[in-house]
Amino acid sequence: MAIERTLAIIKPDAVGRGLAGDILKHIHEAKFKIVAIKSLRLTKAEAEGFYAVHRERPFFKDLTEFMTSGKLIVMALECENAIARWRDTMGATDPAKAAHGTIRKTFGTSIQNNCTHGSDAAETARAEIGYFFSGMELV
Ligand code: GDP
Image 1 (cartoon, protein in one colour):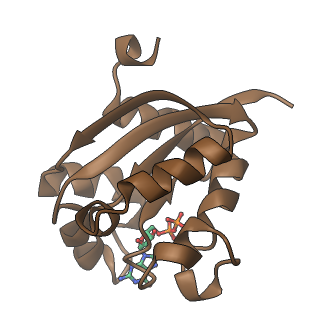
Image 2 (cartoon, rainbow, N blue to C red; image 1 turned 90 degrees about the vertical axis):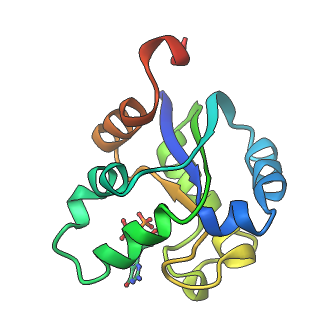
């Protein structure tokens, strides 16, 4: 199986509730390598750019407001099959439907405030990692 990279975000709800350490523990226990990591706050335009694929969805305004409401922790994670493995580690989008032991089930409070983001495919992972990190930061 190929070594992949995926973009992971600890969202403002989780950072604000002091859950970053607990979520990083899940990441370490699942044996991801953290290739790059930084903390930042998105502008509205930056959040809209990141979620451009959801522009027509009814929750787009709420989602982009939520994602600009506080600091994020953004990471490029690497391991075999990283994209699917990180999505498994997070659990389903809606915490109420996520499997037991997943990050979203354990810490998420709503379908929007679900604590983490993960890329959904190889192409989006490449684009999303490039949205946040320069080539030099990924060496
Ligand atoms: P993901 O790939 O599991 O993050 O899910 P999506 O790509 O479908 O949605 C992106 C993000 O939008 C989710 O992680 C949630 O934070 C948010 N979201 C998804 N569905 C809804 C919804 O029905 N209402 C609201 N308010 N937010 C949503």
